Length: 87
Image 1: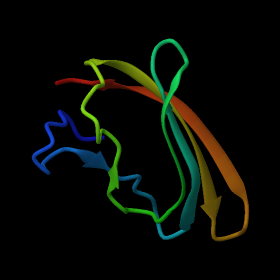
Image 2 (image 1 turned 30 degrees about the vertical axis):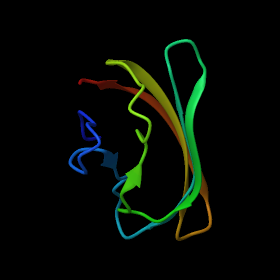
Image 3 (image 1 turned 45 degrees about the vertical axis):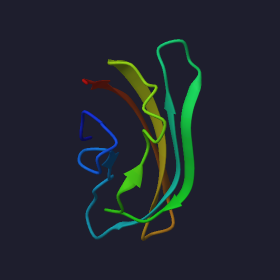
């Protein structure tokens, strides 16, 4: 994850990187510390830059994520975690 987002086109997005076995990011959701969903997307290509912080209203804080990954064998893997956004 890249930060801080400033709206200048630098560090305003992130990508989910994976091996050649990763076919698609089926679903991505980001949550603030209160559990409110602040971003959601589906059908993202691996290594594709995703603009998340379009409105720039997100404070420096810890955010959670849930991502569903489709692998080349057809299996889906769900990952959860957190990251720190620093402005």
